[in-house]
Amino acid sequence: MKTLVAVVQFKSSTDKQENLSRTISYIEQAAARKADLICFPEFHMAFSPAGQSPSELARIAESVDGNFVTALRQAAKKYKIGVVSAIYEKAKNSRVFDTAIVISKAGRLVSVYRKLHLYDALGFKESRKLMPGKAIEKPVRTASGNIGLLICYDLRFPELSRLLAIDGANILVAPSGWVQGPMKEEHWLTMVKARAIENGSYVVAPDQVGNIYAGRSMVVDPFGKTLLDMGQDEGMQVVELDMDNVKQVRKSLPLLKNRRTDVYDLKVRDL
Image: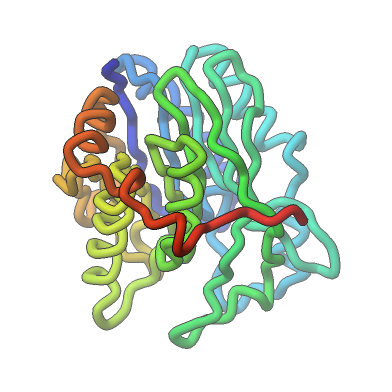
């Protein structure tokens, strides 16, 4: 099975409605190019500058049945295209969840994942504004494939990608806002490729560009071949994924099968 996936490299403004309008336009463009799925980066609801307080960000946040997601669901249904998006979701204590969602071609909200690993590293402290999630979201079956969600900093924790792959994911989608800095692009390229190779999975990694972000949105195939690298160009690209390639790679390089589960095992505990 082959599927067309649109990847959007986005420079978010601080204006949520402006970002939503641009998002709907990209959905329409992707549908016109016959894409089955369109993937947006982390923080594409709005850019949160360093000087913005947690309470100011909390005022931007919405629930998953709020206006932002409702508009995306309506667009997905209208244009018959799946959507992966990321929002600031209302939480508590003036902090918000960094939440990725999957919307089906029929406009149904089929997956909600709250970022587990907050970027409290390299001079940043996301936990000042964000609340960590408490659960891994099971991969969801879509017209494009079985999508497993992770977000940005989650890429540095291979356990999450592996658990999603064990649970049936053959496309790992990682909406990201990868911050610029020394060696950061090299880390990004390495992490995205590693997660694809070690799991025999496609990795679709749409990234923010501009502001403080590195760009380089990527799609990598299950054997580690880079199918897309958007550099610093804002916009949208469409890539064809051949899902039979996942089966072929996992058969010839059976990393999931060859795990020594008699010696070690990864399990998701109930929360």
